[in-house]
Amino acid sequence: MWLKYGVNEEGILICIEDINRGKTSLQCPYCNSSLTAKKGKVKEHHFAHNEETCRPIANREFPTLPLYDNFNVQLSGKDLAQLKLLWQEYGAKNYPISSYLITSSLLKAGVLRKNLYLTPPEYEFSDLGKIPVGALEFARFNDVQEPLLLKKLLKFELAFKHAEYKNAPDLAYRLTDLKLYRAQLQRILSSSLYFLEIQTNIGTLYKIGVTQRPVVKRVAEVKIDLLAHYSSVAIRVLGTWEHRGNVELYFKHRYQCLNYPIGSLTEYYKFNAEDTEMVLRDLQQMQPKILSLDEIDILEENSSWEQIAV
View 1 (cartoon, rainbow, N blue to C red):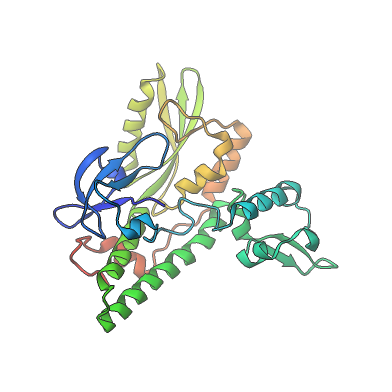
View 2 (cartoon, one colour):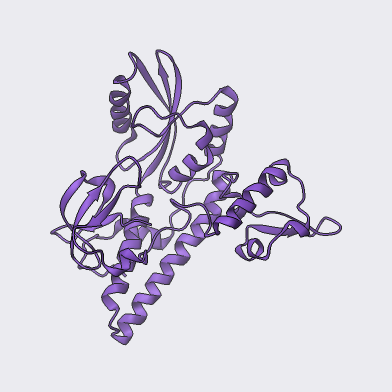
């Protein structure tokens, strides 16, 4: 978990992806200390304090979106390794899993479930359990993630309202939690997912990405990027999905074995004809996103830091 947002002079939350690397004029949303944008090639892009890191950031106590950029569903390293082994030996082959192979911690995490139609009852992967191994289709992934996103939003809203009612000393802290979480939701909801087919002089590539602008503008930028590596580039948009910025990182997780980085460009893939058909079908099975009232409110809100958006 890394701090991805700073506050500018107008009180607006600014994402790390929207600012250049190096020292900034932004402040930490918790302690108001000045921040430096760390955008290297090893660690995730994030903001770092110029002075001592404040407690919420040092202790990783700030809010993040569930199942957005971490797909291990809070399993320990040991349990994650066991789950991946069970998938390799049983889940991927659609074999039932005997109870003697199951640990209580995996059951408690909800990644395995009992199949009562088998005699004696044995176990199988739940939808949640398929996420760490990248085996869950995008439509089902949305079905799992979206309720978790809204449940966590409600948690932060209730915590803030309770602190406000009690005039609690941690009121500002609770407001910061809520604003940061809403900013992250706003970013994924305001983004469209796109999938591109790219013909180059030496073969065909595919690209996944998100944008908050018209896709045609993003495509023009992609072409410029690629012309630094290829003598000819022709791009076709295979699909766009509005309000689906939540899916991009799971796509990278699900199809990481087919990733084809081009220098520092990491969102490119090489698929054969069969893979392409499978991936496109996977994407096209997603239903159009229907915004809830809370999500509409988040998209329309003024993101000023001083305004309490509840």
